Length: 498
Ligand SMILES: [Zn+2]
Image (cartoon, rainbow, N blue to C red; front, side, top):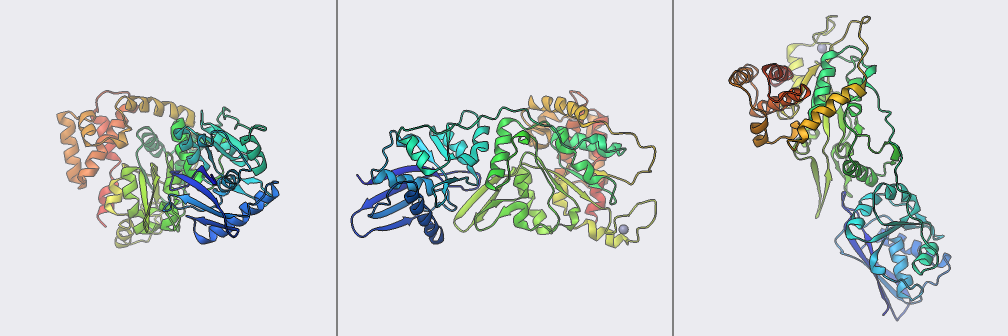
């Protein structure tokens, strides 16, 4: 039979759906057609495959060659199908005999000389080939990704001739070196932040419970310095978390550093970033900053300067931890479980409330500036804290991140017994785990009335109070915990008033 079927994978969001490359040879005038690819990609793939076959010491069959990439409605681009197509032609033309072809998957772009080139987004394919129980043959340039995935059955090829020889039983393909090295801890340290005790405390609570945090203060008071220290006080990612984050980096062609792959990402897009850059999109959907920050920190400095429509789009992933991008008939989904740290000036000039008195903004201007951040977005930020200008001189040295992280770890261990980080408790779990005594209930009700808080903010306060109690290793939320949590909502009123 002059038909060969080769298994490979496309890329859609962080998924790598299976694709069958079916190669059929028939009599008639020699031709080479590929169906199931966009036109321009077909032309390029045809040229590369044809040259690679000839330059690897094989014959380009003088037959009618039809290649079908199925299913037809999946997006297929890039050169990742070159290797499967070339192998299919060799098998269909009987130049290559492979035992158990069914047990393999292939991925890789070919150069005209027949060398294999790395593909973008190999990690999802590696993970899913492992699930399918097949051996994945991929370019040696993707060895790092392959080495990260424990017990994945991968082989590395450098060129078409070598892959074909190994499949025919002559020689073997290299296995990826499993990555077992130590993980470097070189994140910026909290010891660099002097003073700002209240903001440091808020950052620790945010880390302990996975809460979003808004910092308000004039320029140059250390908001960025503080935000960038958050990954260093969070626990390192577990392997499955790290793989998810690396998979997103893999499809966005980010360079993977195995020594730092357990470190939580810290992304700080500029406020001029487009909606697509921030949340993802494009004709061929790509992940945005919110997905690159998956399991890590998204820092939005100068929050009111961001396009308001873009900020509103953040609300959905802040709840669900994922973003769905629709393009025509296609839907791509990207994970986006980020922790939001936002910073803003108190007024357009930045110096409202500053002792220097250099702020000349009118109350109207200040209200308008603050109202650029909508109430519903603000509602989803659990902690608001001021980062004021400090007197230079007698500032205490900061406690190092390693010490803070110990307390964060202990508080997170308590939450693990309840099944979720406090920031992600649903209403039923809040009722179960965030109970107040009658005095606490009165305290919270009065605060809500005074600050005109929404029902959502009410829930947020309870979750933050739970985290503060956890940092205290307390079983019940005491009034002191609750009062501190309420203290981190003091901006609601001023903000909503605009
Ligand atoms: Zn001002």
